[in-house]
Every structure is written in structure tokens, then in C-alpha cells.
Image (cartoon, rainbow, N blue to C red; front, side, top):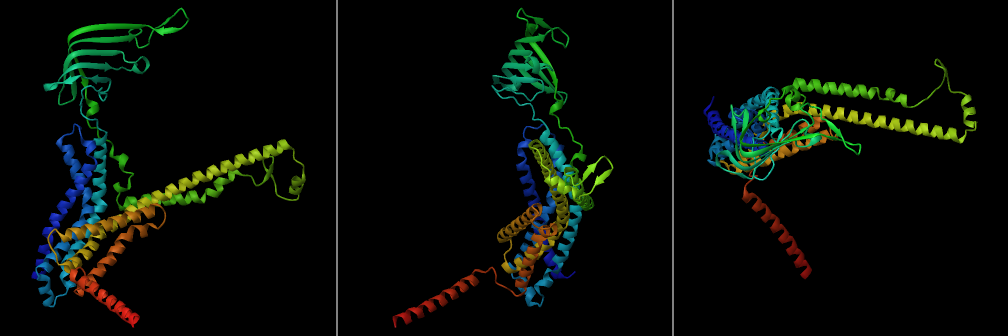
Length: 498
């Protein structure tokens, strides 16, 4: 390896590592802020959050690699240009393309790594991360009671307190305890207490409610059995017999399980249907299956619709009368009004059935085609996202040589602009594919094609030492235009005056 290659690689790897870390952190924080409401008041341990951050960090790597490649290559050549090292390289007879050669090899290697990561690691990280996120979102919030408001998240209870004191103590407690027959008879047990406190035991597995100086009211509908007893009234109606109990206490203690508040892991197989959870082989198999089902349904569409209309007159079970002169006699035969009404009714019913069949089959075919396009689009993105790392290098390196600005100022601004362009073009291509406006390869590769041509243009400008982004070039250009306009209008005024 030559000293020139070492110089360029040294100036590249530092910004690349820093940029990659910052970009992954930014994308991770964006995801965390988006789901912040699902994390608040959840009784989760540190390992749950660590696993979630780890999986989503892996998920953001394919997205962060192109931006890191663009910014670091732009900074590397921008620093070389800013400190006139690139000028010295050119004066030694070394072209800009030759100076880009070591980073081009690195960009190819990163693209290969990105492809392997997209095909192998990303589906696994998506499956693990989003299944864990779903479990966290469905986990109930920890017991958090507010003053003067009924708390109903504890199964079987509605709890209200007037005031919360220190050390978990509360005053003015009202507890409605529900049972399996509460929907039929209403609340059957009410507890009123002057004060009390709530705390958990056995590693937050059980909740203890201790009440002081209160009254417990119970309404046992009927006898002690589960079936209520009804009493006939003089009016002939039956009303359930109620047995009210009132019990005063100085100290009353209840223990309830908090199992419903813990996080329960869902079977990951329920999430494997999504295209983000599949590799290229699975995506190809699923897309081909959907395409085959689409073609078979389309092929059987005509034969399946024949049950909704008649085209032969059948006599008995076996004999079929073919169309002939007898049709003319049927046409000229007088038909009664009742028969006309019956014929029109049957015709309308058959038409409505046929129309309903066509609409349902149309919706089914569109769904199949849309799903197949979705899986094929994700398969193409495995390649386009990996190749975008190389394309971003083809944009960043010549731009750095043209701009000749290093650091995190101008390079960051330019990188963000091109990354937004990549994001917008990718989403627009995906939208056109899902709407059926363009073929899947066209929509998937549109962004990379446009940016590749842009990179080729910048490389050509860098080879010719273009001053594309220098302010004085455009100032001189506008001065020339201004002088031409001034001379032209000056001649016209002189001719008009003469």
C-alpha cells in the first residue's frame, strides 16, 4: 500500500466511525421518541430496554451506512482540498480518480457487508425487535393511582382515593370489588376506609392493600350458591332475593396478583409473515406463490362465472337442445305479465350475483398482486440499499474535491440534502409500485439510478477541476449577463434617441 492510499484511508476511517455512531444514535433516538408513550410507567427491567436498544440499533445500520459513507468520503476529500493536499497530489501527476481508488475498494466492501447484513441480520433483528416492542406496548402500566379519579387497570377492582400521603399512605379510600356476576347485578362489594396503604411483595408479583377504620358492604344475590334465588311478588313478578351484609373493621388486608402487569412474550412466529422479517430466499418464494395464485385465479375467472348465467336449454338431466328454429317460436310466443315479471326478477338477481362475484374476484386479484409487489419490492431493496453505499461514495468523494471544505459544517449540510433526496426518491418509487403505476424494478431502482448519474456528473466535474460551488464564479457569470443586457439596452436607447 502506498503512502497516498494510507493518507486517504486514515482521513476516511475516523469520520466514518464517528458519523456511523452518531447516525445510529440519532435514528435510535428517533425511534425511541416515537414510542416514548409506550415505555412510560411500564414495570420493565434494564435487560428489556437493553435488548430493545440492541435490536433497533441493528435495524438502523443499513439505513445509517449510506449516510455515513457519503459524509465521511465528503469530509475526507474536503479536508484534502481545504489544506491543499489534493492540489499537491494533482501536481504530482496523480488524477482524482486514482486518489479515489482506495476508498472505492472500501465502498465496495461496505456494500457487500451491507448486502449480507440486509439479507441475514436485518430480518432476524426486525423479528426480535418488533416482537419485543409489541410485548412492551401490550404490557400494562404499573399501578399508578391519582387523587380523586377511579383507577380501573387492576382486574376486578375500581379504586379511588381522596389524598395521597408519603410512604404510600392514602386517605378517603373507596374500593369497588367486582366478581363474575357484576355485569348482571352490578357492584356486589364496596369497601370504604378512612386510610390505608398499598405496596408490592415477592419481587412485585403481588399487591397488598391494607385498610384502616372502615366498613365493608356486600350484596350476596340469593343463596350461597352461584345461582340466584328469585322471590315472587304479589304483582306476579319475580325479583332476586338480596342478602346485604355490613362489616366494620379496624384493619383489613387484601392480597392480589400482579401477573397481568408483567410483560408476556408473544410467539415470534406470528410476526414472520411481514416482508421485513424475511430474507431474499423467503421473499422470492412468497412472491412466486402469490403470483402463481394470482394467475390461477385469473385463469379460472371465466369458468367460475358460468354458474351465474345460462346459455343452453336443458330438457331432463342428459338431453341438451341446441339453439335452432325453435328459438324464433319462443320469441314470437306471447308472454303473460306475470311471466315477464318473473323473467325480469330472475334476470336482475342473476345480474346482481354476477356483479358481486366480479367485484369480489377483482378485489381478491388486486390484493394478491399488491402483496406480491410488496414482497418483490422488499427483495429489490436488499440490493438497492447495499448498492446505495457505493453510490453515496461516488457522490461524496468528488463533491469533497470540488467543495474543498472539511469538518462538520458544509459536508453535513450537503450530506443531509442528498440523503433526503435518496429518501424521497425511494419512497416515491415505492408509492408508484404499490399504486401499480410502474413495474417493481423501475420503482425500486429509480433512486439509485438518478443518484448514480449525479455521481458520474460530479466525478466528471472533479476531473476537470470545476469551480462548481465557488461563489466568485457565479458572481462573474451574473456580471457578464448584466453587462450584456446593459450594452444591448444602451444601443436601443441610442438608436431611439437618434
